[in-house]
Length: 158
Image (tube, rainbow, N blue to C red):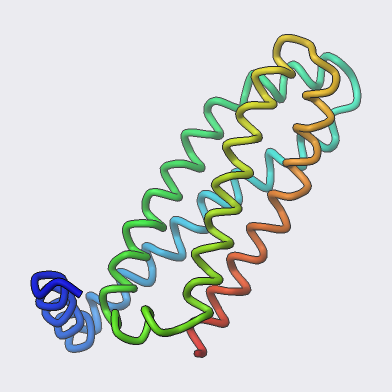
């Protein structure tokens, strides 16, 4: 590991470990970002899955860009605070398999979100197959959000 990264990690670990307000704030931001992103995504997933008529589908599709901004904003906070949490105990994280599992789940979540946006574009143009694919990504979204929470809790106990 480069000396500058180790030096930064050591400094941050000291700040994080010796200042309760700092550690509580970082954990709060991590959980708040997760709550904002996941609640917006899951509520929209339910709307996608429940949209039966063409009119309902169009209303759901019209609202998706705003939801994407909310989810991405929440995920940005999660990633930034997650980086700080990683730096707070870098040596442990780099050698903990559950950490890599969490990164994999987050990667799956992001890939699913990318696919959702791709299928959304097709569904807007009226492609029935893309509406079906959009519904599949909505189902997978819930699995990945809950998996991220599960693996995050598991990591906190490792």
